[in-house]
Image (cartoon, rainbow, N blue to C red):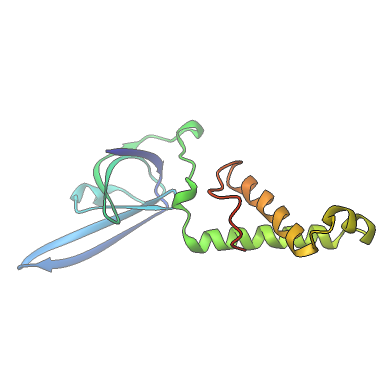
Length: 152
């Protein structure tokens, strides 16, 4: 069982019926991850509430096993969103921003300094190297899974 503390970013409900029995599934989003349950107690939980969730990963789902409503959440309790949680769209946006920042940085340099920085590698290659450095910083230093992979 895993545990997470955080503030509920969003809450959704879905209702249905199976074999004549009505059901309601609740989904809570915390730190970019979705957690779900059929527990009626979640009816009392709202967006913006601070919670601690015990959950199990079952396939593609994070199933809530227990939830505690907290009075408030301290900075130390806030969960940093691990890189593996970032959705593909968010990752592309971060990479595009890093690449744009690297290109703007190189564009602002005088031609002599640009030649010295590139040292025969070419502007494109140098720009990608700088963008990867920015990306490692965005992902909190060293969290980049494979710095050798060139997927820009």
